[in-house]
Image: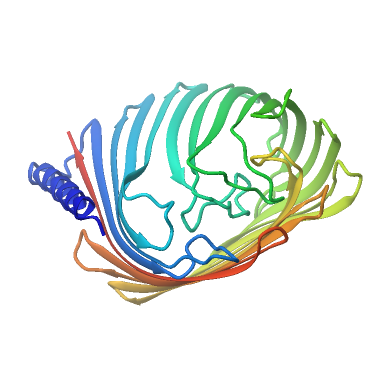
Amino acid sequence: MDSTVIKTTAFSVALLGGLATTAMSQNAYETGGVQLSFGIKLRAEAQDNRSLSATDPDSSVESVANLSFGILSETRTQRFKLDFGGKLRAYNGDSSTVDDGFVEPSVALNYALSSANSRLEVSASLSETDLSDSDILSDDGLEILRANGATRRRTMLETRLDWGDTTSLGFGVFARRLENTYSGGTPTSLGGSSLNDNLRTTVGASTRMDLTQAATLNLSLSYSEFEEDTVSGTSDTLSVNSSLTLDRPRGPLSINLGVTSVDDGERLSASVSRSLEFPNGKFSGQIGATRGVDGDGYLTAAANYSHSTPTATFTLGLSRDVSSDNEEDSERLRTSLNLGYGRDLSPLSALKFNASWSQSEETATDLSSINTTLGATYSRDLTEDWALDAGYKHRIKDSDTSGRAKSNSVFLELRRAFITRF
């Protein structure tokens, strides 16, 4: 392990801790107009197949210092937030494509301005992601990207304006630009093809009409262009969506209709959704159907449930839908199931279990990838400010193009957040 990396990590951690301690000694928790936050997570992790490779598993041990710094300023009508982040990593393993030193820098900016009847929000972000990391997902959130040594740089710029918030008729417009560029390797997608640099530009408008005190109609229209290097021309997407929401005593009921036009055809969707409140939990569900651009019909559904007691929490999430919101602009059927259970062992410690299963399938080729994750984490508050996490994670990936692979990992993490105002 490179001694320079260790020295750099130690110096940065000491510097961050010194700055935070000084800030806290100067009446850190007084209220004020500007809030500064410093975060640090020291993590050691050992894995037996970091990249989930079916043919060449790579064992590794790595130490990471996750560093973050944020500025927040709020007034009655304005909110400004600026966040910086990055990792100092020392890696010891079989892979030659994982970098030591300062990796995955990020910066995010958000500004919001509001009045009695309108809101303006502007956000921008720039981040680099090492795709050889163990949990890097595609834009649809279900497919684990194959790295092959690649790093992804993502740039996002978005602005939105809403007005008529306090009247029976409201409007909104937005614009978004999302760009992905890859360097240092050739990542592959669900179908096994190489991912290229791409750019998606989207504009849209929406309106809200309060038909009665208990009925609201929402309409939205969006248009996007998808550009991909090495592919001539653009892929155009036009979407029209509507929803009628009826307020009910135990929770709202919504009827949703949508039409999406892409280069390969049209996608039609219809669904009914409902939300319910319980004394110790919440439930939201949706059931519907979608006709894909290939002409086939698909059942779609979603369900989210949470239940809490004084010492335990349980969560369940289920989703099945059809969309083309991914790095290749290809239509996919996506299904996922997530379970979580947490229990307080004492006032200072807790144990959490989680399980997730997801499948992403291309409707045109029927190629699919299934990802399963099982994990357990023990957490303990060491002091008022410091906390410790220790855990185990087991992952399985079964892909039609890359085969079946498994991975086990154990980790130990020490974390703390510092907050001061002036």
